[in-house]
Length: 85
Image 1 (spheres, rainbow, N blue to C red):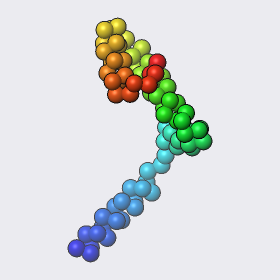
Image 2 (cartoon, rainbow, N blue to C red; image 1 turned 60 degrees about the vertical axis):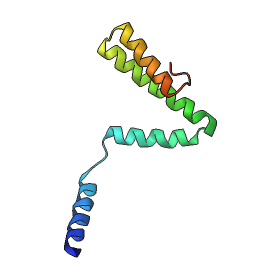
Image 3 (cartoon, rainbow, N blue to C red; image 1 turned 90 degrees about the horizontal axis):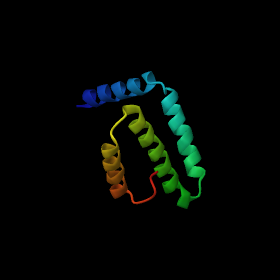
Image 4 (cartoon, rainbow, N blue to C red; image 1 turned 120 degrees about the horizontal axis):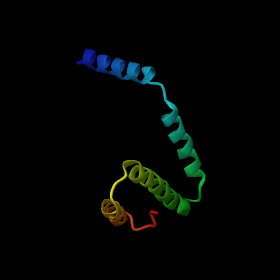
């Protein structure tokens, strides 16, 4: 049993060493630091604005119909009633 835990620990350690952060990992870590510097009452709104930007990019990139767009927008608003777009 002790050997199994040692082997598992070695595999996890090696995986963490082998994995280098790419530009997306670094960008997200930088944004997390910046978001934490915002006043607490602005953080949630900011995150929803970013989600809205992503959603708009997703929608325009996929060229979906206006009906699907409205359905997605409504479903997001049900999850979070804050202004999304």
